[in-house]
Every structure is written in C-alpha cells, then in structure tokens.
Image 1 (cartoon, helix red, strand yellow):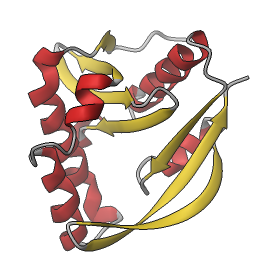
Image 2 (cartoon, one colour):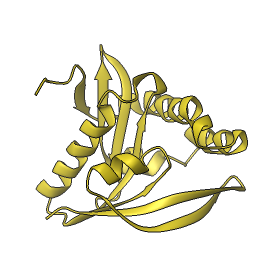
Image 3 (cartoon, one colour):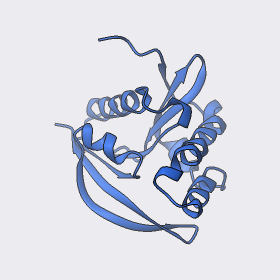
Length: 159
C-alpha cells in the first residue's frame, strides 16, 4: 500500500486558531450538500464563539493532518472515550485525511485502555464512521443557535 502524502502530528496550542479555520471551512465548503444555509451559518459560527471549542482543544487529545505544511484536517478525542471533533477542509476531502486521523484516534484510545469510543456524527462523517466499523446507536435532534439539526449517535467497540 502506498504511503499517504500527508503527515499526522499531535495537536498543540499553537494551532488552535488554524484548527478553528479548518472547522469553519469544512462546514462552509461542504455543508450546502447536506444542510440549509441557515444550518451552515449557525454551525460554522461555533468556530469563533468563545468557549465553544475551548475545552476539547485544551483538554482533549488531538491530531493534525498536514499536506505540504498546510493544516488540512484535525481530530480531537474529548473526553477520552469520545471522538469530539473530526473536520477536513473542503479542498482536501476524499484524500484520506479523515480516515488516517480516525485510525490514529482509535489507536490512541486502545493504547490507553479504552474499550469503546462514542461520537455524535454529522451527515459528513456518518458514512466514514460506518465504513470504519462504528455502529449507529440512535438519531438525535439538537439545536445550534436555535437552528434544528439531526445527528447520528454512534459507538465503536475497540476490543
């Protein structure tokens, strides 16, 4: 199998602003295929609202995916039994970034003794998680900024 052209690195604080840019870009560049303009606007605005991503970024364990020294995707596990964030810039979708990040997050969790991981998946990440052996537990309805969303609550047994 060919080695990926991108590079994974552990997340550090110096990239938190860039991670927020990737988060917003992922939603804004890919969202119109799955969500209304109102949903895209509400969801992407979370990248810049104080406190929304702070705890996962500061307290979680994350990985960054770079292509030619440009940050293209990231994943964060927070708390340690939950995939909290998995986002990829629109220009870099379908190139293996999210798959590599997901595999790395799962490996870390196994190495740390986690027996399962859970996640609340969007329409973006749901197919990837299914292909990666995650199971749908239930569909959840939430509101972001007063705007309704459906998301998939999923789990993966790591044993």
